[in-house]
Image (cartoon, rainbow, N blue to C red; front, side, top):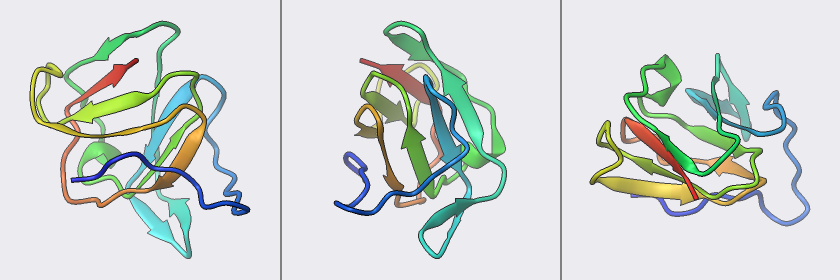
Length: 106
């Protein structure tokens, strides 16, 4: 299980994750995300259920470029199976041992 993700002090990793989106990548090479990312946006607090995107199958990297903490769940309705979360404007590596089915912006 993973908790919050963030970049180590002094380490800035630039990603192609536009403002107000949270992005997940399927792989990491030398500490940087690689592969085709899944991008999700939410202009207000709420859930994004029933996620179907290849990078959400055991994602290895996240960049939360939103103003919300985003929680991720195994279930497709955000009802149970919370895996972890990423703080607003944070990024970092993930365990990559789970499939994300739902995102909740808080």
